[in-house]
Length: 111
Length: 131
Image 1 (cartoon, chains in turn orange, green):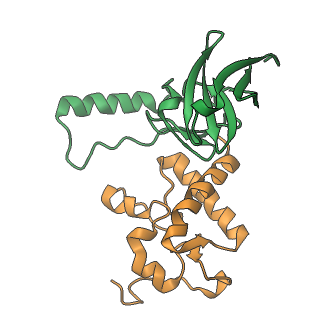
Image 2: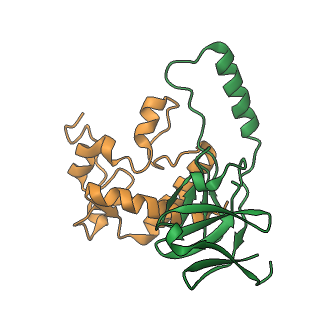
Image 3: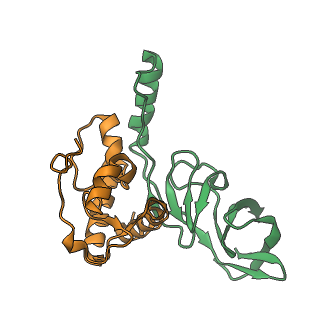
């Protein structure tokens, strides 16, 4: 299986999913490409495209909440940051993704 | 593969986003309609030979109904292997659990191969395939 083809396929699937959730792919094309590549690696290893920036705990009920795009499981947190945890997706109105810091949910008072 | 085109199906027999299996000169094929563009692929999944027309077509990506292996119908390239086995939160009865785990262990040895594609074109309301 070819990584580039799989990245294109994931991009197509994710694009359809995140739009209705109010998100889009980050305008930082290099970052998006890098993160998608990590997801393809994780998918090859685990069979599922996990978020590349969150730990796999081998506890299915928790791990399923970090399958990309994991926005529905962390909606309040991601909406507060205007980005998802790894930064692959940002709110549709975001043009400068570098201005959006990664803030733990605890620090935002969401846990 | 020759460039002898053979009539496969009428274009109105396959709705957009749909698939139909056909047998042409002893070969099993699936005709895929990707938003008005037609593609012809081998009918059998590159993972475990399941009939691919029973799967789903999203854009140009076909997902097999059996274990969710995915293929690009434009190139036949395998894009993903089967999804991992999940036995549920409650463990199944021991004999079933042992059977499923054994099947899973065997399935892990199976590679997902790309599938063969055929040239296809539309002429006079027919999808023609080069065999």
